[in-house]
Image (cartoon, rainbow, N blue to C red; front, side, top):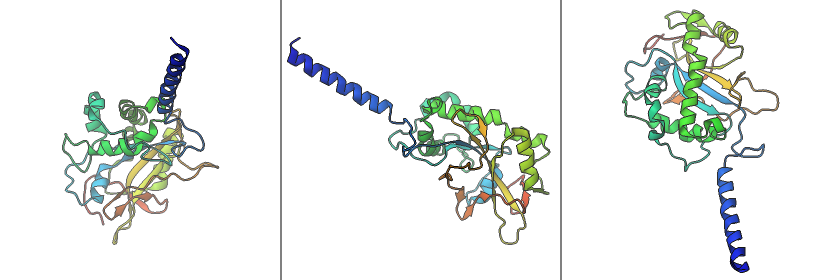
Length: 255
C-alpha cells in the first residue's frame, strides 16, 4: 500500500474508532455530567389509592402493591431517541402484567405505561451496566420488587387494608425494623370533610450497587427532581406523621 493511501486508511480507521468510542461512552457518568444520579427509587403504589385519585373508571384494581417505576434521582429523559420496544421484554410480559400493570387502563395489550417509564426513567438508569437495555431495566426492577416483597412485609407486621386508621409512625417503624432503612412514604392529603390521609406510594432507595439505603437526603446531596404523583387535581405528597392514615381496601370516598 502506498504511503498516501496508508495514511488515509489510518485516519479513516481512527475516525471510525473514535466515533464508536464516543457512541458507546454516551452514558458515561462524571460529576459534571447532566445525567449524573446518586440513587434509584423503586416506587410501589397502592392501586386502590391510584384509582381514587383518577377520574377514570378504574375497575377492580389489584389488591396488592404494584410497581410504579424504577427511577434514578435528579435526572430524566436522558435519551429521547432510545424508544421503547415491547419485543425486547416479551419474555417478561406475564410478570409485567401482574406486578407492573397499568392500573388505570386494564387492557392487556396496552404498553403505554411501560413506554413512559422507559423513556423517562429507564434511559437514565441505563448508565449502569446492569440496567443498560430495556430487558435489563425491566427485568431488574421486577427482581428488586420480588426481593423487597413489600406485600409480605406489611402483612407480617399486621398492616393490611382496613376501615380503621393507622399511625404513620407505626408504619414507618415496622418498615424500618424489617428492612433496616427508611423508605419514602407518600399519601393523598385529606379532602374536605376527611380527617385522615390516604397511603398511596412507598419508595425504596438503592445505591448504584443495588443495595438498599435510606431515602433521606444525605449531606452534600440535593433533592431529586422526581415529581410527586399527580392525577387530575389529586396529588401525593410525603405523609404526615401526625395525621391518621387510611389504607383503603376498595375504591370509595372515605369520610
